[in-house]
Image (cartoon, rainbow, N blue to C red; front, top):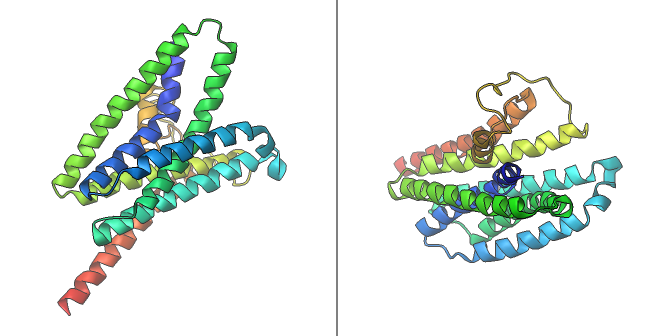
Length: 256
């Protein structure tokens, strides 16, 4: 139970901490206010409680695919808000905190709902909760420690003018989360399923601690299919291409 609890936090809570690290580095670098963190947490936890309470009802929508559709649409919105943050940051060196609030609130809602469902199940059936308590404390401590290290790394990149590296980290994270949303649609046959292109479980398993960490950072999958790879590369490549073209146009206008 102790190991299961830690892995549970690495899977469902770590993506929230990772996003918070990136957004805090961005807001501190651009001198933006931090109101998005408090309001995003409150709104996200409220949404997670509502989603958890209605999960049985939502699951019956659209012939049993209602929950997956809600999760897909929500994750797509979170991706869109992260792209808006990146675009504004590149254009004007700042971005509206409302984008950060929306992206963070959605991420807290989605991952918080998963965490609440599993924790509630563990608490309901676990006769000796000591291991669960220790696992929860250790899981939170591990997520917080990793988030601090990631924040320091991201903030260091921004301070040293490595904005492109920071943007790539954000896009890799956003693309990884979006790819998982498309996987949900495949699971309910709303998108076709394809055989895996390879299997790297012998090196890094999805169920290992390193696998969960890489999944939270960049959407690592041990056995990805062609649809997953296509979505991933498009989610990373198209924003980078758009930003590159925009920069070239600005340089061209400046020369004229």
